[in-house]
Length: 541
Ligand SMILES: *Cc1c(COP(=O)(O)O)cnc(C)c1O
Image (cartoon, rainbow, N blue to C red; front, side):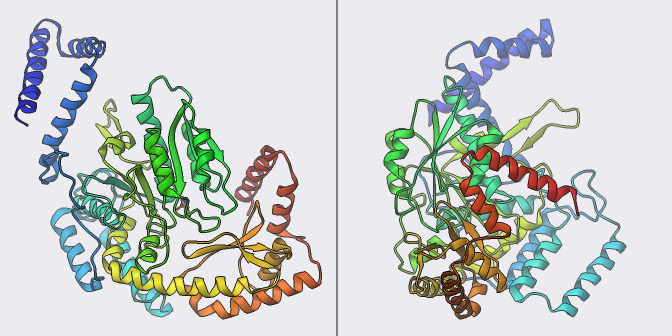
């Protein structure tokens, strides 16, 4: 693009010439302010300024990172780093990481940094390390995978990803993790994003980005709204309340999937975002994403797919041959996806990915502030100081699992899920709510009091997750359930019979709370109540 180059240089030269002239008479400060104020009133100039700023950033970034970037957006290629087909050996991964860390990052113990890390003197940390090793040896805690993750995590416990230029190895782990996830969610090399502390932060970031995008592109919208099925995760409600976006819930159909017609009817001139789940947590059911995607394209709205739960499971379930609705970037209307590494990615807690189709969306996630006496400040996500341990562990776990590792685990967990679902469907008085798509389901009632059933199961030592509207028991199936699946069905069968025969109702604890909550018509009261309970929990031992 020869002419773009010249336009850019002409604009830059003009700007510079004007600034220099004025500076000679007025001084830099006043001039800059005046010029920027004037420029903003000229239509279209704001865009040019932004464009120039972007070009400058594109040119400047390699100086800081050593990476080669051309900033062009022409042909979309596959992501640069993909999930390895075959999981790699723990040894090779540790070698590669240690090498990168040694080459690129400053040793947090070396006393060379004056921010970001707070470590004890080396002697003290050696003592700690020995203590941890001894503890591991004595307790025999964790299998190989666990030990591997622990070791990686441990060697990064003092790193801080607050400033991406201080720990280049970690920045690389983050970029490559995003790229690997993009690769199996069918994104291309334009897909960009961040690692966050969890699904909630990923969702908060997405909603904030779309709000800021709307502020920029549609300034006439003063009260932004987003449309989502009622089964969407509460993190969206949290985002709505944090970022002043109105949440417009629509009901789901009898199949517990988003009612796309209802979503369309809920769109107003204030709508800035559509949301759907793959799958929703409640019943493990994927919304009809292709239809929502078509709706998003038709109404020119962005669409966030919450694959926090399924992002690391559905791709493998689909490859195993189970029917899975197309939920990822293969849908042209999908503009962002959240996927949790700390769920079926088998990473350590505190790791999730938020992916955007391109920087056109991700740019609105970024925060910068140049006026602080402490330095020029920039940040990608909610956190200031960001722990590097879970980012390093996330990268390492993806590499170690590989596609084959995820496929193998998915197959096992799917088999256990099918075993449970088939058996539960045969228990008199119980059913499965809807047709779950992956390794989670909710048990519903065909006559048995579900809340009493949950109580009864808890008296047998199981820990139950209650769901509501309609009442149910949620089960996410993990690899650890394979060895107890027969026992679970046995106990559930006995408990269902017991509750039915004794006509039990829910009397105590969580079930009583759910029972009461269901009967209080004013939900604001219930909400106040929940907050009170929290205040209670956190002020008393
Ligand atoms: C777990 C989950 C979230 C939230 O993730 P956290 O890591 O708990 O913050 C969001 N959406 C769905 C569907 C989930 O299952």
